[in-house]
Image (tube, rainbow, N blue to C red):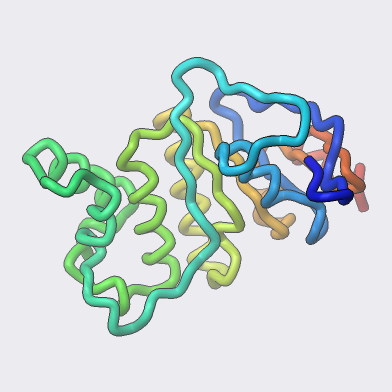
Length: 206
């Protein structure tokens, strides 16, 4: 990938196995977000190509974005923004299922502006789950969360991986969190990428 004369990365080769849990790691400015934008088809690579297996449905959870305390929508209504405008019985059932899946059902009527950071981030996850993805990209999704909320979100991600075999790509700078929950890593640095088992990461790079 190049922007003008600047090469962000080149000769990247990697595969994500179905049902895997992979951390995308690397220093700031190495192109992790650019790579995610390529995978999300928001950017076209300068050369080369990639492909997903047939039937891949992508879900995306962004970095934590705080919501104004006066934001009026309830958690349930906020999640429903990602659903069809006409809320049929089937759509309502799907929203309820994802509220339950993300442990938000009991507080579904709480206004998003009053929800904690962890609850808000789980609401973003629930939005992503409405489309029944089998691959989820977490783009610094635990940044700015307190340690309890981070663990809560990642336990939920692990549950989704184990129960629904959802493939996970987790962009993060939090190495201990990645070691705790991810099986594999992609390490992006010096315009190259390397892949391995998360258990071997520190030994290879520290």
